[in-house]
Image (cartoon, rainbow, N blue to C red; front, side, top):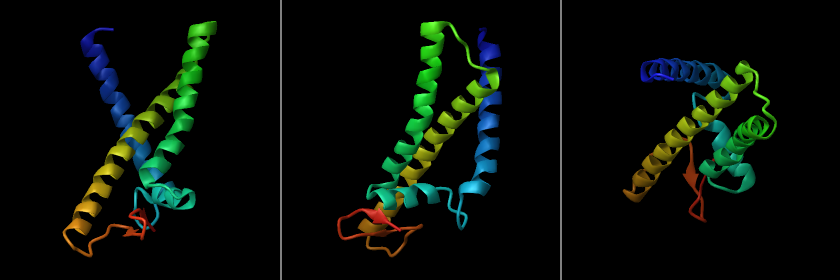
Length: 131
């Protein structure tokens, strides 16, 4: 693929990622919190929200690995729509992880400075941020 063609492809993929993030945000956000599911999932599992996100992300990675296995082992290529969905979801999970880590860092810095500032969480006795 020529570089210009690839850059055009990548630009369109990132536009699609943004559209999906915006649309799914309406489904998954609670109280305008883009990371609600990960804080809630972390609370249920007793882990940090980042780890809860990685657990949810694994489902997408496994699907992508299965697609790669099908191509490599059997020469079976996925339907373009399915491949696009899986790749878009994987990119979006990485974007969500990046944002969640940055938010968590900001919360920790505020806590370290003695501020009462919290975005959505409080720090429990074990040092974990929980709802």
